[in-house]
Image 1 (cartoon, rainbow, N blue to C red):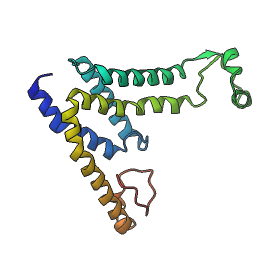
Image 2: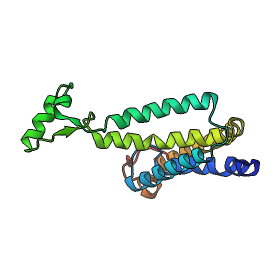
Image 3: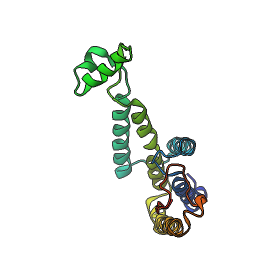
Image 4: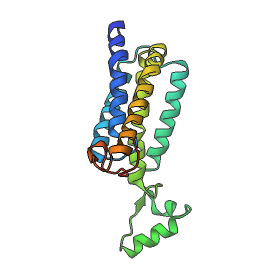
Length: 190
């Protein structure tokens, strides 16, 4: 990555990405449309950084990404359909099979996860922190750390101010709540 492009990324993309995460609820999975957009952007950003990787994946970054890959593989493995005989021997499956039989269902294969939708949601939510980590590593840690020194406090301060506004104006101004699934009258910030 050229020096000029790296400076542009350092000055704009990381703060914009963090702000987008704040406004869409981060990886909290509230607001399906916003999350779908943010997870898609996160995945595309991480993929673009990997495709354009020029020496930033080494040392501690490589180790952290290896742990992230192992975590993602564990989540993916929980979604793989397995034979019913294998899954039936796992703990807490008796209630699941009883429920399926009451519904008149007898699937031949089942995943390890009792909640595959939630597992897939967790896998997608994992894209956001991985993309932020990759972006910080790609623009060089020193620049990324300097940028985060002011970006994170500003975002936290903005969230705190929004929380105060929600306390004092919340019931009279529901537009202060950025997401559908919040607690009206409570200071939820972001």
